[in-house]
Length: 145
Image (cartoon, rainbow, N blue to C red):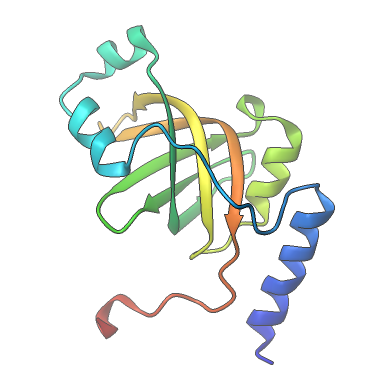
């Protein structure tokens, strides 16, 4: 077995030890990723800040950029993409521990409020994370098609 697979299997065990169902049967989302872009894509940062629109979305992790007590992940549902901002003081401790066990390719659910980053990108500030499925093999390189 590939060492990367062994690491990911170990991470799945740690996710179970945190008390998460390793294979949940459903996740109720409020929007698909393209629906978030369509409904909120035109709104300014001020409008989003004022309304504090909550969304529940699900997707596969394409990128993960951790920065100590925070990080960004990019989710994809095959039709759209959305950035998620994960901040330790905005999440339950257990959910932040779950975030540390995420790998590229994992399926996750995210609940949170929408805002715009300094660069203007529509982003969800996560208030809850849900583990949906582990990816044991790395995703293929983009240039492989």
